[in-house]
Image 1 (cartoon, helix red, strand yellow):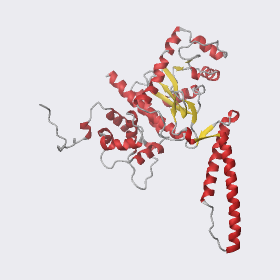
Image 2 (spheres, one colour):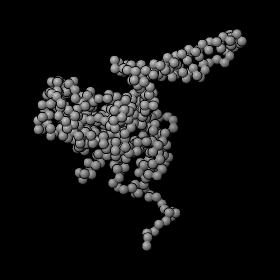
Image 3 (cartoon, one colour):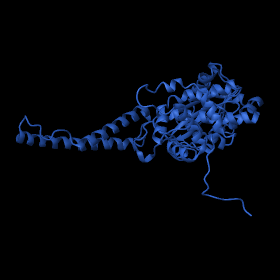
Image 4 (cartoon, helix red, strand yellow):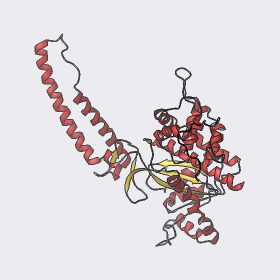
Length: 410
C-alpha cells in the first residue's frame, strides 16, 4: 500500500504564511533584526508627494535575506516572490515589487547600506559578540561588473581619438560645403534642414568618452603609464587585478576586519591591487564603527610595509604582520628597522601562537561569502555603488553569523 497521492486536490494555504515555515528558518531572524533597525536616514530619501513607494524596510529585508541565502540578483528575488514562501512572508500582503523596483532600491541606497552594516555590528556587540581583543584584517579580489571586452588600452585610445578627430573634421568640411550650397539656394532667411547630423553627434560623444577615460588613466598611472594600460568603458573605476584563479580580471579589492568570533566589524573597498596601504585605514574603520580600537591586529604579508608598521607603532596600536608568505621563513633578513623588529617579535612563542589564528579568523568570512552566499562578483558599477553593495553583503553575513553563534550558545 502507498500513501495517498493526489495532485489536483484543492487545499487552503495557511492562514498566516509563517505557519507554513520552519520556526528555525533564518527568515524570522532577519525579519526581527531589520524591524529593530533605525532606518530614519534611509526613509528620509523618499519624497512626501507622488505615488506611494514600497516600504524600504520590506525591500531591505528581501535583499538581506536574499544575500544571506545566495540570492544576489533582483530578478531572482522577484522570481522567488512567486514561489518561495520565505520571500512571500517578508514581502507581506498586497502588490509585490517587480525586479526593477528591487534593483533600484539597492542602487539608490548604496550609501545608506554603510549605516545598516554599522547597526548590525552594534547589535552584535550589545549582545556580547564582536570582541575586539584580536582583530584579523584581510582582503579579497571580487570581480567587477565588466569584462576585458568592454575595455580599451591607452595606445588604442590615442589612435581612436585621432581617427575620430579626422572623421569629425571631414564631416564638418562636408557640412560647410552643404551649408554654402543651401545658402545659395535658399538665401539667409530660410533655415533649410538645419541641425547636426546624427553621425556627428555619435562620433563626438565617443571621442569625448575616450578622451575623458584617457585623461583619467593618465592622472592615475602617472609615470607607470604604458601603451598597454587599459580602462573599462562599462565601469571606469574597475582595475585589472590577479584573481584567485590566477587570471587577470577587472576587480576591486574588498577589505574586512574580523572579530574574535568571526563577525565583520569594519569594511573597505579600494582599487589598490596590493594591501600594503590598507592596514591603518582598516584600523581607523574599526574605531569608526565600534568606537574602540582593536587590542591586537593580525595581517598577512601583503600588509607589510615600513610606513604601515611605523604608523601603527606611532599610534600605539599592537599588530602582528607576517614578514614572509604564510608558512614560509624569510629568504633574507628584512632590510627596514620596522620589518626587522616585527620579524624578531614573530619569533616569540606567544606571538606565533597568536598569529596562527589569523588564517581561520580572517579568511573564513570570505570563504562563506563566496561559497555559501555565492557572492563573487559585484552587480553594481562605479566605486561608491560597489562599496554599498559590499556593505550590504557584509551586513547579511553578520546576520548569518550572529544567528549561528546564538544557536551555538543556546
